[in-house]
Amino acid sequence: MTRLATDRTTRRPSRSRCSLSALVMVGLLAMLPRVAGAALVSESTIAREAEYAFEQMKAQIPISRNIADRDYVSCVAGMLIAQLDEPFRSLDWEIELFEHQAANAFAMPGGKIGVYTGIFAVADNQDSLAAVIGHEIVHVVAQHSLKRARKQVRNHLLVAAATGMLGGGGGTATALSLGAEIGLNRPYDRKQESRADAEGLELMADAGFNPLASVRLWKNMTKKNPASPPEFLSTHPDPANRIDDLISQLATSLARYNAAVEAGRVPQCE
Image (cartoon, rainbow, N blue to C red; front, side, top):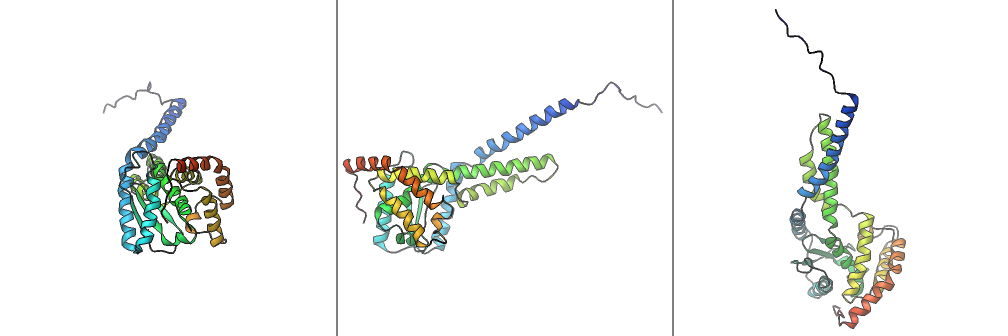
């Protein structure tokens, strides 16, 4: 029987070439989650998830039927929204007041704002309430939920891609399904919270709400239960540091507030 001769001239790839290929593959793996995360988690995806979550909340948490309180919250939110740039000013904003003792409020992508009646215990006037709602609106304008979701998808896809190279399961579908949900439900990071504080202060001032009330608000929140701050503060920067940061920004925000008053923006929501 004739056997085929082995081609002894064939050489194995050099170690340096293998190393280069590995580096290229690592680079592609690093790029894939970044590109895919941005492409697969879109603004419309997050907005749809937000709408669904908001409808679920309205079905599960009692809605306040106090017309005066509802008008009050809508007035404050409306004054703030009027100062937003496009396209956010023209969003079809939906504002809801929930009958719940939590001292909390939130805003979701797509223009959903929720306020719990428990916030009135610490936000005891229109200026303080504007500080709370303005902070939450900034999270929407800055697209913090979208950025958080994309980051989470990138992380999951990177792990999935690396696992696939090693012969494990993919996990890509899991990453995509988790992305939008995490973007809505996980806490914002400290950098995003600090930005929401700073720009929320400017927004309330531009709408004609006195930014001095923001300092009083945070003091009321920590005073309400020093051992366990209200839910609104649970994932936020340290209250003492936050108050110091707000005070350091008052000179600028007060100048904007005075300009708003001179321009005739004087809210009368109470």
